[in-house]
Each structure stands twice: as structure tokens, then as C-alpha cells.
Amino acid sequence: MTTVDRCGIYGWAHHVGGVAHFRITEPLRAFGGVSDGIRVAHGLDLTHETLDTYDTILAHGVHDPERTHIWHELAAFGKHRLVLDVDDAVWAPDFAPMRDHYLSDGNLQRLYDNVTVAHVVTTPSPVIADHLSRWNRNVHVVPNTVPAWLLEHTPPARDLPTVGFQGSDSHIGDWTSSQKRHLQRFLGEHPDWALHTYGGHRVESDSDRIRHTGWCPDVETYWRSVSMDVGIGPLRDSPFNRAKSDLRAREYAALGIVAVLPDLPLYRGTVDDGVTGRLIQSHQTLSGVLREVCKDVDALRHMQARARRHAQAFTTEANIERWVTAWTSV
Image (tube, rainbow, N blue to C red; front, side, top):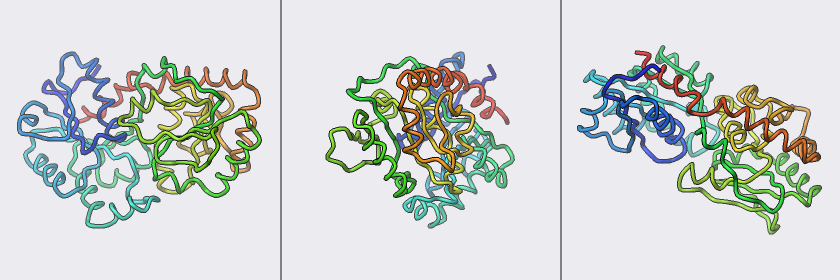
């Protein structure tokens, strides 16, 4: 195992949400288990004591004026290795609040400036890597991953076989009128199936077969609450979405959930079509593919088991060397 320098690595997060979890907390957790005593920590503050203790600073998406000033001071000081992670194509956002934030007040230009002075740039997306390589030649693609324990986790019991979806408000625009109709059609044709949504997307209904779980306080709590047989995730083919990671498919597989997702490049390979899940082709419909997947319970169970075996390649433990290789590339 390659190591970081003896002082260690500190993850400087600006929030405690999902992005910070996957791009800072989770890789540092796995590295801490194999780092042979090298210091590893993360937090919201960057103090003088922290800077004296750690020689590598890992941050995500720094673009606000205050943190940008600190980032450039660190670059000028020259005593720390600076690793900047970017996980969304914020220069081409579909979601209006993200567009209003990044495409105003100099936020996007500050992000590019911070990418430029970083020693290392990481991202889960080859599309983002290609874009950011204009500002920094040392860009590494490191996928989002899940902890190994997730593959052994038993989800909560459910009364009915369940189709589910998890996502933030930024994905509401991916649910076209056609997608909604096809989901309703499937539920109408299958009264023995339920729907459970998680996070920011709620399906309004009086049916006791349709449930919603709001935002959980942390990612692990969410994982332990998820209970579904088939996981869906409509995604419009847009520049922003083409730069998304395949995390949804990886989480589904690790939890033993059969993914039914659009046939986009980010999911090809992660979902082995017809073996561990299904990729919806342009000539197919959501209701039609769900109908095929759910018609044979035994076949569905076999697909769930294959998905979980496939997910062994998606664990943080199996991929930590990729993070370390990026962190130590200078």
C-alpha cells in the first residue's frame, strides 16, 4: 500500500451531507484502517493546530470567497499538499438553485481558480475530469464507493415487494410526465407491489402502498432504513447528468436491490444488463421493463444475489488504493 506522508491527511468539509460523506469521510475511514498509524481526520474547521498536524488537505468543491482565500493562502505557503475534489458539473447545472448559485457572484470562476492551484484534483466522473484538465493536468477519476459491511446488511422487512427511488430535489426534473405515468401504470397493474421513495422526492398519493421516508441525519442511517426489491432512477440525458457518477447503481447493488436505470454511459458496466439489473433502452418504457423484472420472483431473487456479488468491486476497501494513488501523485 502506498502511503501519504508521515503527518497524514485531513479532510476539510464544508457540510456534513452526502457529498462530504462519499468524497471525504468514507475514503478517509477506509484509509485509516490500513494507514499503519498515519494520522487521518476530518472536520468543518481548518485550524492552525490542524495545519501543524497534517501535511495533506483534502477538500471538496471550494468556491466561496472565505474558503477560497484560505485555499490560496495554503498554496502560497507551500507547506501542504492540496487535494481538491469536484463531483458535479456545476458549470452546466440542470437544477435552478444550483445554476443560480454557481453561475453568479464569481463562484464558478473561484472554483476553477482553486482547481488551478491544487496539487491534485479528484472526481468520480471521466466527463468532469476531462473538463477540469483544462485548469489542472493532475486530475484523477476515483469512483464513489460503499463500505464492505453494506454487502452483509439485512434490510428492514417489508410487507409487499417494493419498487423504490432515492434522490434529492435536484432529480425532480428527471421525472418527466411520461415517467410518472409509467410508474403509475406499473402500480395499477401490480396491486401486490408497493412504492417507497426516500429523500427529496415524494409521490403524492392516498394509497397505503405508497410510502415516503424523508431525509435521514446521515448516510449510514439512510442505508439502514432502505428496503426495496427494485430500485429505479430516471435520469434525463443532459450535459449535467452525463457527468454524474454511477453511485445510485452501486448502492442498489450493494444492498441487494435490482437496479432498473436508463441506458446511459455512466451505468454501463456498473449494471450488467439482464444479469444484475436492467438498463432501459430508448425504445423501452419504465413500466414495460419493471413488468419484465417483476414477473418472476425466483429470477428476481437470483438477480439480486448476483448484484450483491457484483458489488464486491464497489466497496471502499477494494478501491482505497485508487484514492491513495491520487493523493500521493505529487
